[in-house]
Structures are given as C-alpha cells and as structure tokens.
Image (tube, rainbow, N blue to C red; front, side, top):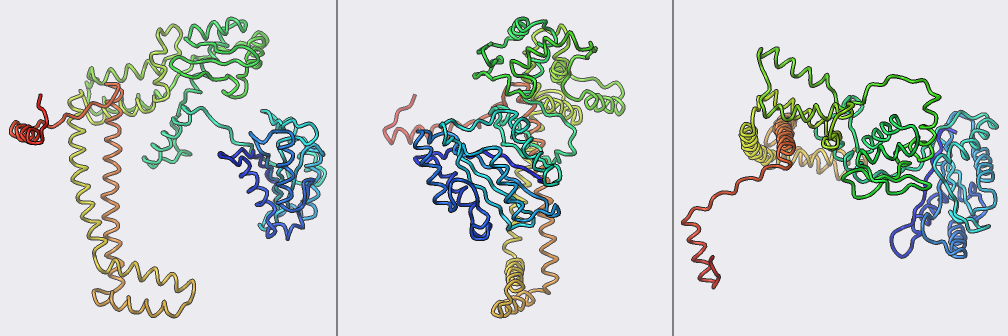
Length: 503
C-alpha cells in the first residue's frame, strides 16, 4: 500500500449532528466508483441509506449521538503493484476484520475510478457490543494500526506504506503567529523552502523553558520549583501536568508540546540524567547573529568611523538581550521573552535603520510621510493607466475576440466563427490585430510596474510601522488637521440655528 490516511468525522454544528457522516457514506458508496455497488463490503449493509440508518440506530440505542461520529481510513495502492479490485477488496476486508472485528458497524468500498485503486473504510465511533467509543490515543498508529498494515504488506508482497495521520489543532496564539508569518512571506514573495530564517512560536519558548528546568533539576519537585522561579503557575499536577506561562490567560498541558514533554516523559528524563553521558552544552540563543554582524560590518566598511546613534542602540540592545536571553545569570529574562517570537522582525528593523540612515524618531516620521506621499501619487498614476487600459477600444474588443476564439476551438460552433470575423473586422478598422495585442501587453507591463512600486512602498511602510511599534509600544497617532477659526465659527452658527448647544 502506498499511503494510508487516518481521518476523524466530527459532529456537525446544528440540530442534525451526523450530516458529515451521511455525506461521507453516500460519497464512498457512489455506484460510479464501485461498479454499481459491486465493491461495497462491511457489516452495516450494502446501500448507503441502510448503512447510515444502522449506524445512527446504534448511536441512539447507546444514547451517544454527540461527539465524534465516525472514523474514515483510506488505503491506497500504487498503479504498478499488481493489485486488482478483487485483491484490494480482500486486503481491505482483512484490515477491517483485524482492527474492528465485529465490535463496530463498518462499511468499506473499493474505488476504481482513478489510475490507482484505493479503499475507503468508514466505521461507527460507538461499539455495537458495549457502547464504548472507539479510542484513538496518541501513538495509536505505531502501536495498533501499523503492525496490521505491515503484516498485510508482507503477506501480499506490497511495497512499504506511508500514512497521513489526523490533523491536530494548535494553540490559537501559535496559529495566529504562523498565519501572520505566512502572510508576510507571501507579501515579500518569499519561498519558505529557500528561506533560512527561523520562526519561533510561544510553544518553542515553553519547550525551551521546560528543557532548561530539566537540565537544572535532580527530581520532579526541583523541576516544578524551577518553573515557578521562571514565573510559571502550576495549574494541574495529577495524571497530566498543566502550566500557565506569565501573561497567558489559559494553561497548556505539557503533553501538547510534543514527544518527550508529557509528565511521565519529563519524570523519566530527569531520573535518567545521571545515566547519560554529560555533555557541555552552550546556552540556547535566538536569531541570526551573523546576519546582523554582516550588515554592521558593511556599513563600517563603507563609512569608516560610523557608530550607532542612541536611537539605533536601543533596538540593538533589545535584540542583543533577546539573543542572549538564556545566558546564565541574565536577570529579568522574561522582560524580553515576548520578543523571541518577533526577533527576526526586530533584526529587520535594525537593518532598515542602518541601511537608510534613520538616526532618530523624527527621521523615521519624515521618511514615512514621504513614502505615503509617493504612494498617493503612484496610486493616482496607476488608476489613470488602468482607466486607459480598460477604456481603450481595441483592448475591449480584443478580449472579446480571444474569449470567442477559445470557445470556438472547444466547441467548433460555426456561429462563434461568424462573431469572431465581425470582431476582427472591427479591431482592424482601428489597427492591425497583432499591433493591438502588442499595445495591450505594453500597457499590462506598465500597470505591473506601478503595482510593484506600490508593493515595495507598502513593505517599506510596514517596516517603519514595525519600528514605531517596537519604540512606542504602538504606532504613533496621526496628527489631526487644525480647523481654521473661521470654520469653527461657521460650525458654531449652524449648531445654534439647529437649536444645538456650544461649550
């Protein structure tokens, strides 16, 4: 089997909580994909209506209609592995029998509508024997499912499979940071595969704090005391360990940090420290120091004797304290911990100030005002070019002509050919059709040029706003335009006529 997908069918919001389940059953039992139901098996029925009713009756009997509705597994076979529909059906049936037995209502279907055969398995989350829900804990793939698929692969001489597990949710703060980072990468046209900049999240910070606490503790009690010293609150210390970092509203269970961070794993790691060879480890740092050193070195090389201004030094000191935040003996390290997730942004701000000789807040405000004025001017020019592009007659006619041409080649309708000839005559009454196409491309290039300048200006404006955000804690408010005294008098008179009051 080439790949195995493990999916969970959750309840639907609203009165009918099983809508997703019903759609799933009708999809996998599609007669066009299963040769009119020939390749449908299982113990819940042979048609989608019967299967759905059987599963729902079981849920109602055990009074467990809420929560996870079912599980959906997919077994996929490579086109060149010699598996036909009969063998795929046999393998899927054996997989269901070994995993589920007769404890859960299930249906499986072999789909042959694509180049590679694949089987869909959907089974009820509630056992029909004792009413217990199917439990799929962390590590279930390695402990329960993978041994079954490995045996089937070996039995039928199939290549080693891979799998895609059910997607896990992440903390909202981490998701928000990742989403913001991805958006910035798209704006910069960065290819994440080529980008070597490290992005940190609060989960990384908490993991590193736990690692530091493990390294400085001889037992679990000392570990908890070390975390308290780092201003963590121990919310729960039972079967699971839940911590609340400083500034967080909700606690986080350590098991969500990844493998090796559950309470049991942490206790074992502390206990096994004395049996592991001692290795001298340098304290962890954040950010790219060489990158910042290079920009400073080049600046000094171009301008011998150059030094940072006090305004620039504030940012560099803040970056430096964040880079060395885990240096032993560093006091008040939580003061800079929130900067870890934005250390690359802080580094980019320093590089921008050095590159553009921004020496104080007034320089920054002046530069922002100039960029905004340039953007307003470019925006007007872009609007004018776009207006000319859309209103210029050959462009509109040429677009209609190309659309008709595409439809004609797809359908061969002779009526479209007559319309094309009429449009071509109209275009060539203005200029040759090749010249019209060339002029249109030139205007497109001109529009794209203005759009690129706008994108670059927006990116620079964003960097300036980041600098103000770091410096002031928020972007400085724009000054309101003063209303001339004569205008104030006019407004006062109008209010008095309406019966309003003046202060």
